[in-house]
Image 1 (spheres, rainbow, N blue to C red):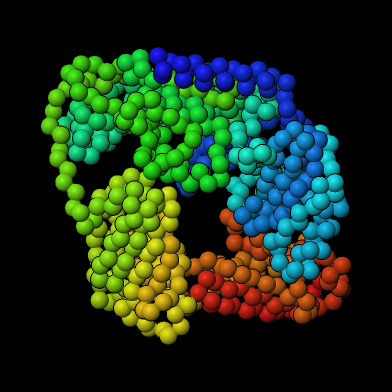
Image 2 (tube, rainbow, N blue to C red; image 1 turned 60 degrees about the horizontal axis):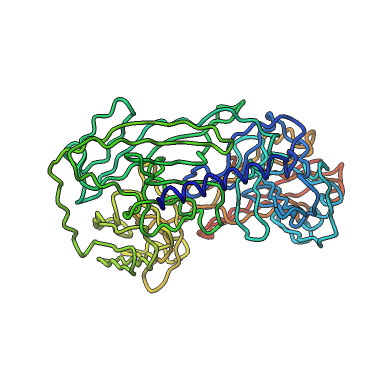
Length: 548
């Protein structure tokens, strides 16, 4: 009865919200039928996608409209998001518009002046409330492809101003968004609990399709689904708004991805497993978006030799719904025992520490989502500057950072800034940073994996791009790359004065300076100096003469 009451309240609440938003609160950001490449809450590698991605038809410079009456509250240029415009609306919502190509006057002039005055591309302006008022439907900026962007689009985030929660914007647009396509499940996974469950005679996860599943199950198991939503007019795979699991007519689990706080987004790594949305909850997972209705966080206890009827119901934000049915066959079978090694057993509800020859790692209380039995290995190599440490053989993301220290066995160069901790992957080393202290490099890590120390003494590479076209296109273009570490700073000078270089798209290595006669005298030769520095402090300076 309690489960029925909770579900009824949920359904009535959704209906009330739908009725409340039948009249749109927002107008659309573009004066055209919306087509989406991404939706709110879809699973990304380290976070939930926080907004809607509106396609622009491959066009840069499409006018972005104010969604309601309000005022511009923040203006930024950042490397990761390009132009960013935050708008506080009088109706209680705040939007963040990302990947903007350019701002309108007088904001565009103010931004450029600030960039030259501060001698940096990344700048921020916090206007007064009455400084830049906007009206519903007014053009407020031009969409683009800047920052981490795979094509021209507008990334629109909506926050509830009072709480700061990011919310699904689709209900706020009401009738303006027409979506008649239901979500689709690609496959399902059954996950036996280690030492407590078995599927077809072993403790391995099993991927299956409804109708083709032959699942003999015993003990505790969890279910998960890989599914995507599809919006009208596009083939992009989006996130599923609501997932509900029923077993034998009883609600076991529900997830509703309609609001996410910024400090919750990282917990996507606990909810998802290799792209599957789990229908059970890790003990250290505090996401508000999901609920388990049994006494075991959504784990299912198969303890009778009979059929267990399962139904997955998937629904999108527009109410389009699909159901998938399958059967788990309860069949008594051997459950592989699990005796944890206390040395490598990490418990989620306490602080854990692991030390070995030249290595120490501390997992603060709450940094793990669940208990983990580490498959730890020391891979000693006397020829290396440090040993290789496999903390675990599987990639497991952490809720909070762990502190890792690795000792240097050799120091072929005396400058300690040249060394860094790297995560070892099949594709090569990934820089995770590190500061030197008393023979060790120390850094925070966000995931379990394999780590060692690497060295970088080579500066970034700077190469001109289409130099013969600079004068005709009024642009200087360089490629700046580094094979090992990140480029942490760069600076351009023309005739001894600051020149504004920027990286328009983070997926490209190009850095551009727009030649402007306000800052550079036209019709003469100029002396250019470009400096790039990587995370190890390696510096490359390029100087040359050009005519413009």
